[in-house]
Every structure is written in C-alpha cells, then in structure tokens.
Image 1 (cartoon, rainbow, N blue to C red):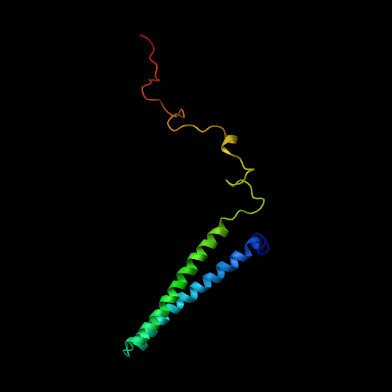
Image 2: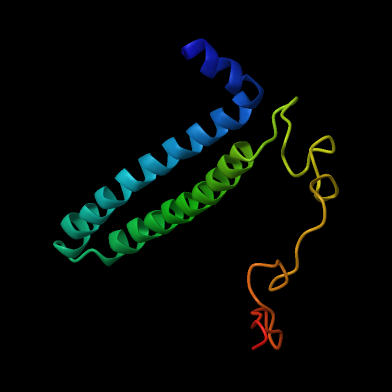
Length: 129
C-alpha cells in the first residue's frame, strides 16, 4: 500500500513538501500566539510595562501576518496539487481524447424532452359517440 501511494505521489513531492512545511509553520504559529499573549499579561499588564506590551504585541502581529501568508500559500498549493492531472489519465474535461458532447448526441431542451404533454395540446382521444 505504501509503494502504491508513493508511486502516485512521486510527481508531486515538491508541492507536498512545501505544503507540509507550511502546515508545520501554521502549527507552530498557532501554538506560539497564546504563549505571547500569556507573556503580555504576565510581564506587561501585571507589571505595568507598556513598552513590553507594545513590543510583544508587534511580535504577535508579525506572527499573525506570517500565519496568514502561510495559510494562503498552503491552501493554494494544496488545491493545485489535488487538482493536478496525472499523465495518462483519461476522461477529464480538459483531456482532448475524452468523449465530448458531440459523441453523446444532441442534448434535449428543457421542457421538450417528451416527458409530459405540451401546453395547449390535448393528448387524450375520445372515441366518437
């Protein structure tokens, strides 16, 4: 099973490494932000040190911006990798060798498929008297 998974993931290893690294950055940032918040309360608010509050708040802001950037890039590359077309894969809409609407015949127009009577047309026949 591992060999099969490795064979399918081999063409995408760079993107996978990038996405995993960005997810790790996100995890570390999400774990670091509450620690910074606790530092602001314990060392800044409790002691009345406004300079420490501003400095640590700036660090929190930088970490939050980096977290947002890492999240956006990870989602972009994850989606791009998930939607990638493998070589030799047939049947996708962008595959020139796949069947098209010409192969399936004309499409029926809505309301004209013969599924029910048309307006103004009486389909029942009454036998004459």
